[in-house]
Length: 135
Image (tube, rainbow, N blue to C red):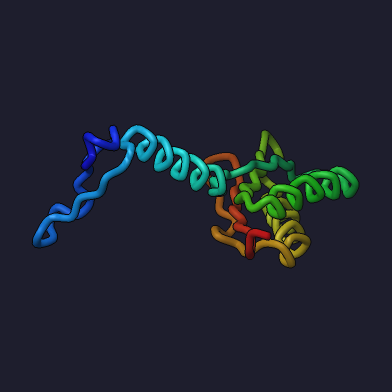
């Protein structure tokens, strides 16, 4: 029957007793399944870790600008890593850096939860925030 219709005989369920076969155009079937997989992959959102760098002596307006950009990242559904670099004499003012991190955490608390609390890694203070929910 498949040869008469110039189509292919495809085994659909080889484990069933008796095995189930289907008459169809195999090339078209492969094309459609590949297209379905491609569309499914296109709709997925890849979680990306975005980074915002701040300094312990950051000014108020500069911090607001950084927080506006961080808010965009979180609204898009990406994770956010906040890095604070300490240089030279700034190492003596780590408490000032921690207060800036707490302000950042409070500012973005409506959009994000803290995935990793602020922690010193070498000469930088690192905190990771994750979005509450992707819109």
